[in-house]
Length: 231
Image (cartoon, rainbow, N blue to C red; front, side, top):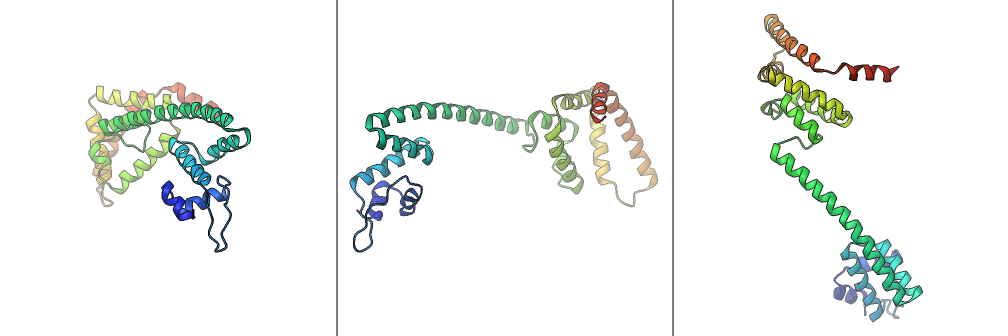
């Protein structure tokens, strides 16, 4: 049989056959005088065997190991090797399924709570409380800069750091200042370059009230820890 015939029967491409030859998975058959390769029924069976194992999830390198064991040690040894490989593959697939299920749970949570997928879940949930949804979808340069900063911070924030953010958010909500925080954010974004000094002073005064509340929520032990790590 020619390579095109083997490829058609096996449902693979001629290029795939050449790749199998290149990695030693399929021996190159002899050629006719016209230069065409002459594949045997055994060659076709091997290609079908490879395709089936690949469909189960085995890598080509792993398939080569199994088929080489079959060729060297005999069919019974090859079958035992494949049975062991199936057990190994089953364990790997179980772990993959668990990872995929966890990914799906995370995706569902992100969709349900409309969280930013660029941020870790807990961090994103807390920052969503601190930044109004309308503002974070405004698409302004200031918002884009804040989001970039959050993405970077999310990489480094520890559990205790996120806990501090949660304390800040909860305290602002207890004091009824969350709406004011969002308003200050919007006023800061909208502040014109030629804004009056009176407008600037008012924004600073309102921001100062919020900053003092934030500082009261922070755990001094975390700051002492950071200071000691720097020395």
